[in-house]
Structures are given as structure tokens and as C-alpha cells.
Amino acid sequence: MRIEDVVCPFCGCLCDDLVVSVEGTKVLSVENGCTLATEKFTGDHRLAHPIRRTGGSWEKTTYDVAIRETAEILLDAERPLLYGWSGTFVEAQTIGVHLAELLGAVIDNTSTVCHGPSIMAIQEVGHPGCTLGQVKNRADVIVYWGANPIEAHPRHMSRYTTFADGFFVKSAFRDRKVIVVDIRETDSSEIADEFVKVTPGGDYAVLSALRMIVRGKGELVPEKVSGVTREQLFRVANICLSARFGAIFFGLGLTMSRGKYKNIRNAIELTEELNRHTKFTISPMRGHWNVYGSNEVFTWITGYPYAVDFSRGIAFYNPGETTSVDILRRKECDACLVVASDPGAHFPRACAGHLASIPTVQIDPHVNATTHLSRIQIPVAVTGIDAEGTAYRMDGVPIRTRQLFSTDYPDDVAVLGRIYSLVKEAKG
Amino acid sequence: MDFLMTTGRTIRQGSYVERKNTPSYRDEASCIRMNPVDMLELLVEEGDAVRVTGNGSSVVMRTKPDPMLPRGLVFVCLGPYANVLASPWTHGTGMPDFKTMPVSIEPTTDAPLPVSALMKECGGVPYED
Image 1: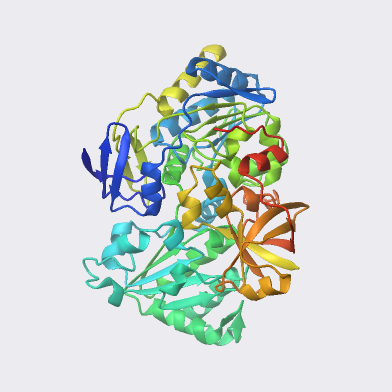
Image 2: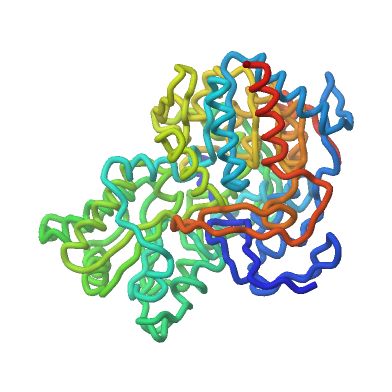
């Protein structure tokens, strides 16, 4: 069977033009998708059944036992952490937030080690963003700052920027100027009109220098700023100022390097300065396909986008204190429920070590690094393949993913719903 | 020799991300890309094992030349190998310094461990599917 307009549940681009051929519960081919999409849809490395660990060995168990024991672990904990959420759909994320409130737990999503600093900056100075459709149809200058879309978001350039013709940009490759700013040359910088190579940790200073030039204070800019010549800074500023519509996309090169959220704040304020002359927008290159959805769900229920602590009986948010890495570093949580993510692989080792020392339960379709740290793993259907649900694209547009076929795996809503019911019953 | 290590995505890391127990994922996540001149000074060739030490821990990786990297900067894709060396301190932001880790690198005869063995080192119990 050939299914059209399939949505890819891999990265924040949420490409919705895939054509997938399936036979029974097997994906035969994927058209229009990038390498990541093909691997995602054709992957056959699912965990076949729930597993639990007793002492030093693993054993197969049932969904009933795994779900009951998970509820007991969460009920026994004084400070449970519910982490992950970006690889599942918003309906499941909603149950997660309600479960956290019921337990008095901390709930955090993967933006804590991704674009969390971007959100902190947006809370300080706002977000002059736009949809990807606006960029595709209008932008004649594109800036990728601390991002490598060819490796991380392989179709971003072909669907929305460098290679995508738009309503007002008839020949994208000729009419759009692309600027890449990074600390190293990448495949993305190779095709840029202007590559700005910054010394590691120097982004804040380069952003400040560009702001000075845009504000008419360019005479104060020194000969070199963090490895970038004055001449190139003026050239970049002039390209931006001569744009009819410019769009900045930034990645973890800004959020994870020195300055963190202050880098993003400076980039947003550069965008604001440019808007005094022309139209400019700025947007984060979100990673997980539904990490934006987790921020939306957390915010519409609690008022905060991630790192929400319910231990006081009300929602409390303080990055640096209620963020997962800090809680694990302090060895504060005494149980952890990991949903649709892999902190074992993507947190510093000290944090992974604490996950191994407490009862950790993982709800995820695949064996990953966190599996080895867990006591229980419950496999679920993969959203966008054998489960459907709503996700938010990197520009905040909600898109309904499709179910291509049915399997015996329950989806995240079914498993989390049962855990919630057991906890609710015990709490009275 | 001392280096600055940075991390990021690669298309191969993304391709194997749902198969973390496999040799393909291990090979990509434990691959350290370096400027060829730095490799010459370290007396290592492509595919040689090196021990990378930082933040009080060390991990074995395999080298790959990358002339696009400036001297003194090495690149490892995000994942459990790079994170052996990551400090859990976040400067009050929630975000560790994943992009800028000072490390030292020396040749070794050891081989990179599988992901399950890395997790065992920090208290886990390997699950083999």
C-alpha cells in the first residue's frame, strides 16, 4: 500500500510530504525523505516486550506487571523526576504533566539540554519569529548561526531556504544569500555565500559587534572580533541591511557555548536592531520532532515551558535549580520516569550514574543507552508509524502525524493513562 | 596533547540513533575527528585508538582526519562517548558545556567500549537484545 502526505517524526522540520509504501507492518520504501527519515521508517530494532531487572539480570515481563511496578516506584518516591517527552505526541505529554502534578514531581523535557537557553532568552526579550512558510516565500537573506542543517535537519535548506523557490523568491539559489556562522567549517558552510568563522566561545562578541555596526557605531569596532575581521563584519552587516526579508536560524552552537542564553538574547536584540531598517526574524532550529510540542503543552498547563517542579503543590520553574542535569548532579531525585528520550546517552556521565543508582523506568520503543541504567522498560508504538498524534513543527505549527499500520504495541497515551489511573487511585 | 573538544550532530549519528547497541552506532559515536596535522603530531593514523581525558574521566575513541577542523579543535558527535567527559555543572542555566570541553589526547592500544559497557561503568546492567 502506498501512503501519501506522511509526516516524518524525526527532526523539528516535521516534513509532511513523504510517500511511504507499506506491506502489513513492514515499511518497504520511503520517497521524498532524507536519510534520517528512511532510517526512522525502515528501522526494525524495536524492543519486543516489556523487560524488568532483578539484581544483575534482565527478564521478560508483561505490560500489566511493568505498569503496576512503575506506578509503585513513582508512589514510593519522595522526589520523582519525569524526564523526556520530546519524542512523543502532545496528548501523551499532557498526561505526563498531570501525572507530575499528582505526584508532586519535577517534569522536564529535552529542551533542558537543547534550546532551553533560547527559551530563557525569549522570556527576557521576546521572540520576533515567523513560520517557515514566510521564510520560504519571502526571505532573501538566510543566516545559520551555530547550526549545521545539512547534518541535523537535512531538508531544511531544500524545503524552506537555500534551494526552495518561493512566491516572492522565484529562483532561490540565485536570489537568496546564505550566511553561515560557526566555529568550524561544515558541509553547510561549504555552500554559504559568506562563512564567518568565530573562535570558540566568541559568538557574543561577534553579535555585539554586528549590533554596533547596525546601530551606526561601526567606527568603534576593532580590527578583529573573536577571529572575525572588521571588514567581514561590515560585509555581513551590509548583506543583512540590504535584505528585503532576512531570517536567522540558530542552533546549539549558541545555546551550549559560553554565554548560553545571553548569546541568544544578543542575537534576538540584533534582530530587533535590524528591524529598524528592514524585516528580520529569528528562529531556533528545534531538534526532536515534537520538542516544541512539549514546551507548548507544559506552558499551556503550568505556565512554564520546561523544568517544572510541583513539589510545593504549585508549579515552580527555575532553570539551574529545577533542570534535570542539576537535579541529577545533586543526586536529588529518588526515582525517574524517562519517556521518549535517552538521557543515558545525552546527559553528562555523572547524571547517568545517578539514574543507574535509583529506580529508573523507561517508556520507549527502542533499546538505548538508558535501557542499561533502568529497572523497567516498557516498549510502545512509534508515533507517526504505528500510532498517531499531534506534534508541533519547529516554527510552532501543529501537525497531525499519521498511523501507517496497527501493531500490538500500545501507544504512549495508553501506557501513561494506566500509570496515571493507578497513581490517582492510590492518592485517592 | 591538549585540545578543545566540541560536539554536534552528524547524519550517521542520526541514522543509527535508534540502534545504540549496534557496532555502527558505537563506531560513529566514538569517532573523534581531528585536524590531520594534529594527528601527525600525536603519531596516530586514521582509525587508531586514542584515550581522551577530561573532567576527571577518560574514554577510548578512534581517530578520523578532518581538514575542515582548525588545529587544536576536535569534534565528536553528541552521545555517550563525548558525555563521559562532560561536566554536569551548568552555571545556573541547566545547560552543561557540551560545546567546549578541554581534553587531553594520547594514543592507546585499548579499543572503544560498546555503549552497554560504558553504561555498566557508571552502574548500569547491560541489556543485550
